[in-house]
Amino acid sequence: MVYLCHPAQVHFFKNIIWRLKERGHTIKIIVIPKDCTLDLLDHYEFKYELINTGPRDDIYHKAIGLIEINLKLIKIVKTYKPDLLISETSYLSHVGKLLGIPSILICQNEHAYLDNLLFLPFSDTVITFRSYYGRRKKNAKEIDGYFFLPYLHPKYFLPDPTILSKLRLTTEDKIAIIRFSSWEAAHDFGQSGFNQEEKVRIIHELERDFTIFIIQEGEHPDCFQKYILDMAPEKFHSLLSYATICISEGGSTAAEAAILGIPTIYFSTIQPGYICELRDKYGLIETTVDINQCLKFIGKVRDNPNIKTILSENRQAMINETEDIVKGVVDIIESYQ
Image (cartoon, rainbow, N blue to C red; front, top):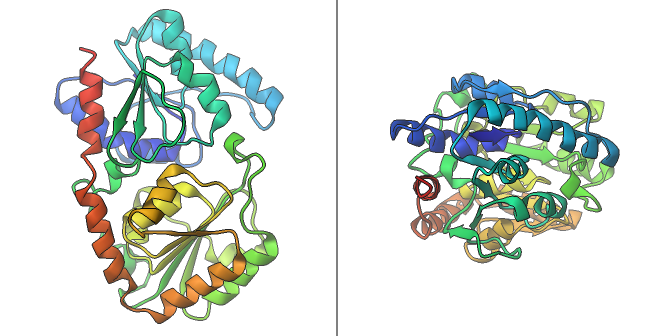
C-alpha cells in the first residue's frame, strides 16, 4: 500500500509503482488530495482510494486531522490487508505499528522537524538520500542520489518537444520560471523568502528579456496574474527543462531545475541537504536571501549564453555519481518478501 498526499510524491512513486507492477506486485494507492495530486494520478491512470479530511490550517485542526486520518487508514488497511506500507512522511507508519504491518518511510527533509518527530520512530525502515544530514537511526537505508531522480533522471524523463510550440515559443526565447511559496506548511514555520516588494523587483528585472511563468502557492497580486502558469501538471517538467532561468523559494522546484541543468537560484532561509550538495559538490545551483545577489544572478544568466553548456557538464557528473533510485527503492521493498 502506497500513501500519497502531494504532487511531488506522485512523480517520485510513479516509476516505482510501474516497476513493482511489472514484477507482479499489487499496489493499493491511498490519497489525501492536495493541489494537482489527483490530476496527476488520473493522467497516469492510477486507480486510488480517496480520503477526505477537514481543514488543517492550524495546530488544533492538524491534531484533529492526525486522529481522523489515522482512524480512516486503520479501517482501509484492515479491509485491504497489505503486506507492506510505503510512503513519504506518512500516517501509515502509525497504522503499521498498531496493526503489526511493516512500513517504509521515504525521508528527504531534515527541516520537517514535526513530521520527522511524528513518523520516523514508528517506521520499520527509513530510506534517506546521500545528502540527508539529519540524524539517522539504525533502521535507515541510504540511497546514493536524490528524491527527484526517479522522475528526472535521463533514463526516466524525456521532455515533450511540442511544449514550446503549444505556448507559442521557440528554443530561441528566453524563459523564466519563478516559484513563490505560501510559507504555510508546518516545516515553513519561522522561515522566509522574498517580500512583496522584492517579488515585484524580480518581475520587473525579468520582463524586459524573458517570457515569465510564475508558479504561485496561495494568493498573488493582480499584477502577477498575466504570468501565472496554467498548464497540465504533467507537462511542467518539460517546460522547466527548456527554461533559461529558474528562481524559486521552493526547494523542490529549485532542485528539479538544477538537476535538469537549468541556471537556478534558490531564495529561502531553509537549506535542505540536497540543495547544499547540488550547490557545493556540483555547482548546479546558487542560494541566497539577498535580493541584490538574485538580481546579479539574473544579469549573469542574461549575459552568458554558454552557462547552460557548463551546467550540462556538471549535471552529467552528478548523473554519473548517483545510482538508479527506482531500482534502489524497489530492491528495499522486495527485501520484505
